Length: 368
Ligand code: SF4
Image (cartoon, rainbow, N blue to C red; front, side, top):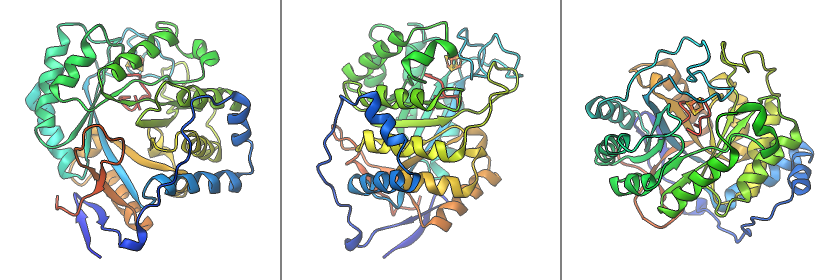
């Protein structure tokens, strides 16, 4: 058995007896709301046990994929997502910045790779990119891809041909969240329709990009509406390869600034239910993680979270948050995974590395 520190995260090659058992859990797209709600309503231990059983049947329970998120175009967004500090209409203190240059993004991507990230996610606070923005983003994607990182972008609603152009530039994943249950959506966003999001997701799938799609919990929705979010995700034509589950970060200046915090165990339930509904997807513990204590994060990993996000501000050398994450991985004997290119596969391409070394964190459909 080899122990090493890859990019600061604890990595360890599993021994043969730790091989992942893969079972034939049926992939369903016909979940009813009552079925999903019944999972939420299970006794906590029963739910987490079931979720962990599904998790270890399809994934290595001791490995976590690490993604880093960089905002490549910040603030000034014309949309009105009630949770988002980047909406121009809310006074949140976010300074609008134009699209970053390729070289600046590249420097951040190199730092992310050195810190142990295997995927680099780039978010732009747009309603959606204009045609003239796509070549600029494509150049950025191409440069990041050339570093050997997986690439993900979250740019908002895509126009005709955008997804294909990004795919051609080397984009692996496109993030576009559905945010919440269809019936609660109108309480949160008024400037784009639920169907708009589904249309962009269709473009992403049609272009052959992997889909990163999840939502946000803790925005004042009911448990039935949380079930509705996960039901909607599971009933998409294809399960997203990556499912970010965000906990609301209540930012002063946004309409949800005073939203009561969700019970942490309810958040764990959401992770567990997502795990059961979409067995082969990688469930990502996303925004809100920095506000969670280590025990809750450990429960999330046990319940099926197999990926984490950490943002650009965490890339600074010696940043205590990065060190804290690395220490948590060591305490839990988790190792960071590296994704190895095997086009056409879903998650079978996630292998452990023994080599040395959106959205926006805001939940943007443009997030994670
Ligand atoms: S979540 Fe995305 S689309 Fe919504 S306001 Fe924020 S940046 Fe704009």
